[in-house]
Length: 223
Image (cartoon, rainbow, N blue to C red; front, top):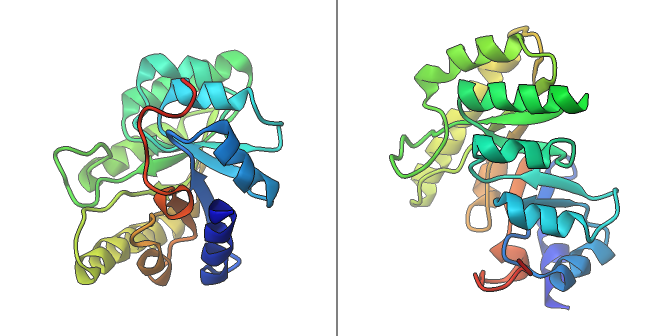
C-alpha cells in the first residue's frame, strides 16, 4: 500500500500538466504492478537489459522511458520498444539511433540531455555543443527531438533553482525558433528530492523513483 500512497501524495502535489515518470530501476515486477494497478503507465529505466526484461511483463499500454546513459551498441535492442529516450547527448549516438530506427521503420522520440552543471562525472551535452547536435537532428528522418532533459548537481534550494531556471531559459529560447524534426514540448527535470523546485521553475515532466518505491536495493529487479 505504501507505493500507492506515495503516488497519490505526489499526484496531489503536481499540476495536471506535469507528467510523472515512475522510475522503476532495480524494482521488482510486483512493485511496478502496484503502480500500474492505480493507473500509472509511464515507467523509467536506466539499463537496457533491465528494461527489456520488464518490457515483456507488461501490456503495450505501458510507456517505457529510457533515462540512463545509452550506449551505442545497445540502441538496436530498444528500437521500437521505448516511448521516449531522455538521454541523447552526442552526434554519434544520434546517428546510431537514426540507423537502428530506420532499419525497423520506426520513429524515435528523444530528449537532448544537457549537462547543465558541467559535472565531469555525469553524461549530457555541454551547452556550447548544442547547436551542432541540433543541426544534425534536423537532417534525420527517424529521430524527432521532443525537448530537453537534465540531472542537476546536488545542492541547496537556491542552487537547484538556478540550474532549473537556466534549463528553462534554454528550453524557451529553442522554442522560439523553427527547426526541422525539433519541437520543444517536454522539459524533463526534477527527481524525488527536488521535483517541487523543478516544477516551480517550469518542468513539465518529473522522474521519481525513491519517492515512490523507497530506497533502491541493487540486487533486486529480476535480472
